[in-house]
Image (tube, rainbow, N blue to C red):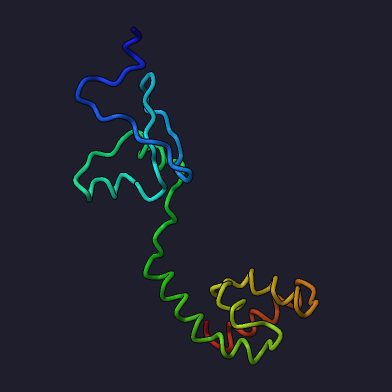
Length: 136
């Protein structure tokens, strides 16, 4: 009998695979653990469990986006206050588009070029003028 293919005495049998789970081998000859996306090392530690190699591998493959700094948050808030005046200046731009660009001048230039057919120089001039007038 091959010992690497049997379950050790007292060990729970391997769980059945779930359709949305990802099978990740854990450096063992015949053991697979099911890891779903919400299971991260941080979540396991909060539950009082020790993170597995598979959970650590998941974290490396799916890094979390960086947390915005206070300066970035205040910049976004400042931009949201100026969306109304931007809509008055450029009526073809929607509020959703202006919100998505989060005050980035380069993205605003691209929007102006797309909606108003401005060349880069003209769009850049208008954006700089708007930012100076509104102290964004």
